[in-house]
Image 1: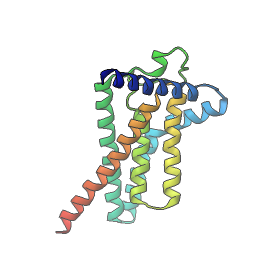
Image 2: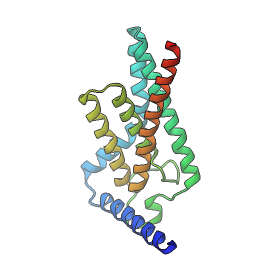
Image 3: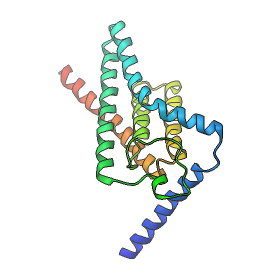
Image 4: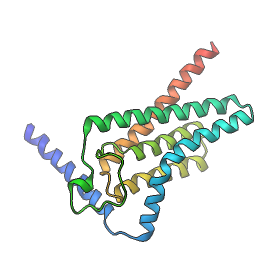
Length: 191
């Protein structure tokens, strides 16, 4: 049984490395610019989304928008805490640190790659916005952007596919949990 698990873990790890390598190769100026844009704007978008919603809510005196802003910001904070805690526990080296065939195309804040903080933040925002504003013109761009962030982090050599997958799960899960908590709080206030 142990050898079965080890062989399957090895296959999964090889797939993780092979996918990371395939995404990281074939450098172009466009890919470099797009990846840089995605990586550099993740934090800004994560702050700007709830701040914009809060501002509109305050200006229009719309309590629902104000609550949405608090929910989205709270989900982002929760996502960040879980992501950073996981990074400290797992301590996985970044792909460019471990493999000389992976090209580093951006500076990484920390030396740990699992899970991807950028991907977690992007999927938290995409999921938060999609759960509150169920319109295709919100959902499609939000998830295209989140997917682009995940791709960019692999292209830049700082994350494996499993890092961005776990980051996406943490981000989306934090948004979903945040919504459920907001709904429980709203239900208690109505009673």
